Image (cartoon, rainbow, N blue to C red; front, top):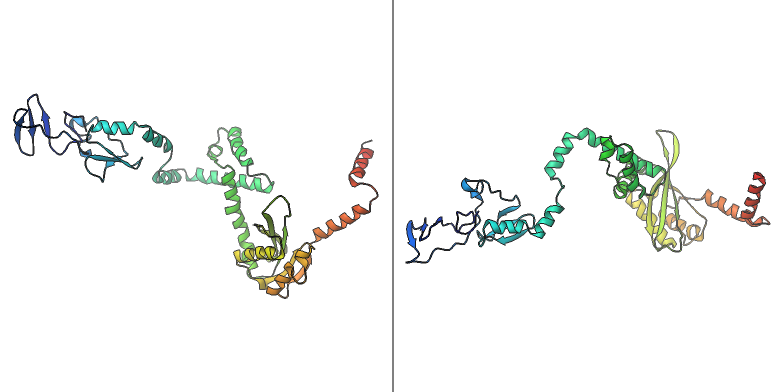
Length: 340
């Protein structure tokens, strides 16, 4: 590629040699003088085969510049996904585009992004390190889950590990902020732990427990569903978290629809439901329109069990009312008496 007046990579297919008085044209193999005819067109075309050959050996065609489908008078930039003309300035047109603000910004955006091939090569060459990093990220996510920490704490914890162990390649490779931590817990650990319990519940009787939030300020309420099942491998009854979903209707119909959604989601059967445990409000325990009545329409033999935690809470509430003084004042007096 060259400017007008020299051998050009952007030529019109006519090999021209400029002198002071004549032009030699290879297509007609005859000499034209400036006095008898006009010189041929000096427009250039895209010809990448000439780059790196002969006097163009020092020229380097940018990797993003390719031949254009619009013709030889254009070039195509794969980075910008655009065609641009090269018939006027030839290589200078390419240089002008490559040094343009739009092209430079896109080049900056992809800097540091590895290709698919590089990613596979990297994973093969550092397979052991990658496995150790993944294991560390899973352990960190389990720690956050077990201690009931916020997902946002992962943003600081991953940086803290790098600062504590600057010479560790595993710590340096940890890239586990709150988004990834949430994905590991909700989309990997949780389904893995649920799988054996759900598989067992599809074949064995189970007990379903549920409770819903009633915060007045939230338009979407949380319905938490637990499952209690006998595990033959350890000969004990275990209670596991099955799911937590958002519902907007706290009526019996809304809560039953949420329970039905969870049961269908995990491919469970109403016929295997042995009992249902909930609080003692009318929405749950109503004999005609409550949740238990709707469950019995699907499973007539289901047992209705009152939640022991709610019953204890009701007993304590009644006991507090029987105390002749305020409970908080009583606790303060007890604390002062013990301190003195």
